[in-house]
Length: 205
Image (cartoon, rainbow, N blue to C red):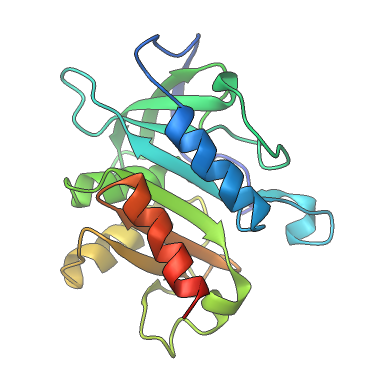
């Protein structure tokens, strides 16, 4: 399966994000990760496709697992605008269906973000980066990890991530390596600050 292509069934309403939804904190964090080359796009890496994405839980009435996520094909942009984010309002991993609205469709990895939010209700931020050094040493570090034969952006990956979280009794702050997705690392935290702090701690480890 080609990476960077949405594999789930998407019900997308193209419209501006609701006025009460702020992208400021998410956008500032995403810009820092872009500067570290943990999110971005490079012609010499991954067949030139964009890589990495970031999301944050949003409070919406009747939508406990709604979240804001970077839009598809936005990896090449150093700083995003409001129109580059999508609001995921509903996700059914078992049916491989996702509902969202915004001016840009959600990232192809949105289903995996959704699974983390559903499995860990206290988590309010998820970051997906490409981190070669950490990914290559994930097993030595005894990180949570999905199997090497499970590809990126698929229902199988979402199910594998959920299985890892439930089987390992995952904490509300943590990291997971997607061994079937070159250099792919998922990071989550109770807040966006907590999630990003793990990256800084690991960089300095």
